[in-house]
Length: 377
Image (cartoon, rainbow, N blue to C red; front, side, top):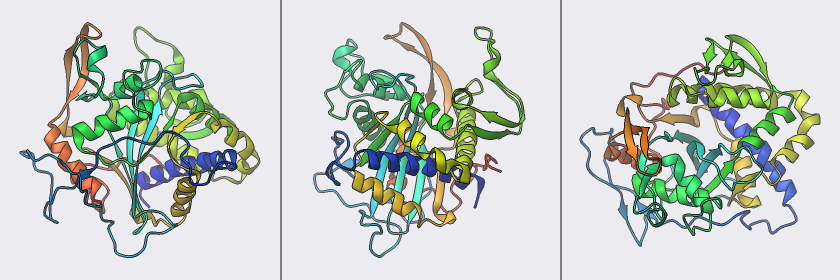
């Protein structure tokens, strides 16, 4: 098992344990009833590209909307396992709000999780939060401006701003933004806030993280030592673990690496024998602190498939870093220049088309020129 696959397993461990607690909490409701409003998305038809396709830097083709959608085909023939559909695509969101509610908060983490119940196989794709994108529904509230950073779609859809009437609120507007700009296919969503993450880590007694190099997030404006993490083995409580996962002084891609290290450490703690007596506290940490339209039945299907996945069928995907260029753009809303990522959206759409169909990433789990980084021991 590769180190990135271990990081993915940590994510699945957190999801499975937390959602298992949520299942217990809502068990008296209808088994198939969604726990939140469903997404309102148009359906996309996958592009018909050759089986030997590779991303084309000069690509101009974009996804096509269709009233007669073509189902996404799983990677192997045969029945779907666990009583689930062949494929389930979940938008996973980490909110930066520290409150117990989802009134405000940006999408600090944006990942698309594709679960193949036939192979079985799971692929997690990270979206950079600083992409400058078109966001539906916001122009009337922003004096005609219809573009903002990707992570703000989640903020504008939630009750604090309510720039959209989407019943799924922030997750719904973010899902429609991704579909509009990149042709993503999303069936469900799950959003977790920072308070929930802190509660999870504390509920299991903290985590042990190994850092090969120091991580220093201190700045002239905030020189506090809480932003410094020495190299080596560290034991972190919930707040310290959250701080490490959020430091982005060296850029969003480096922050993603630190997030994977935190997930690996959390996986180790969740799978230890000492955590059994802490399960009640872990379940309590999730109650009322998650946004999702998954039903208890679908949560059970995800927990079921997690026990059947071979290590070679777990992939952690990232767009190649060289596609992105950091620049500054004047934002009329904030009346100042802000930092954004520029990228050819047509290239990302090509990647997404193949992701939707289960054709990318390949068995290596990453594009050709993307090296794996050792996050897990």
